[in-house]
Length: 303
Image (tube, rainbow, N blue to C red; front, side, top):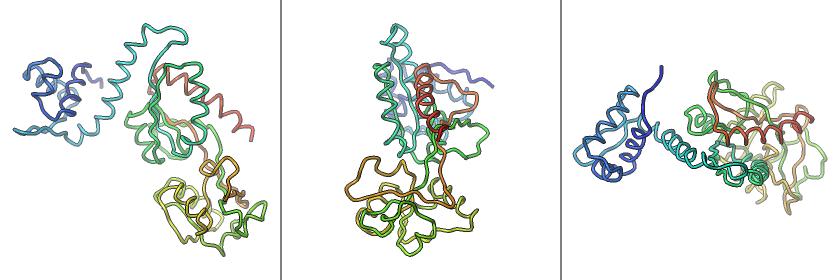
């Protein structure tokens, strides 16, 4: 089923949402209020449900309207960017790439690729939503972003995954901790010490618990936090040790912390590109995704 709506209908909807008033929105768009109302009605008819709730003094969105706001914003921004980029040629090509990315990936390896990409395409802008795994998948599924960088392994028939890198789970400890003297760690070595983990709602925790359960192993924790960065802060303060993805640990030599591989079993998370099945990408996003795959997929496969 196709939805028949115009760019002006979307602009009308977003203007009313942002200004919370039909009169102010009509003035901003240089439309009469009846003309603005007709555009909103046309959009609601195309969607098949009300998007706005109107009272004498206030306008608010329905649940569906609120869900559509980020998608409409992205569509309008990409449309406006495309209009200006039509005139650009060669290295002056412009565009906008909007992606959802795991915070650890956004911090450690994404900037290197963006830096390389920006040398070739200096006029392409980036909007990066650094989101936890579940939120990132939802942003892709709802069309708020063009694609995501996420943990692979979630089963959603509407999404496609392409592998980029393997990210092993490692031990993080202070340099003066007894386990820091070992070159590698067994899971049983963790038992005598206070362990810091992320909350069970985390995609990393779910993956780790499931992999350990296959070997009849279970982590006994003393501290549970929401963010990986918080767990590192507690480790640095000497409150315990932590198990977390290697990408979430300091990549340079750290004055207080070390990481050690954990064996038997070795557990890793696969990070890949996620996009909507059958969806299309803007030219800028296509070029950037190709560079991501070219930069990271081959080294990961060689490991």
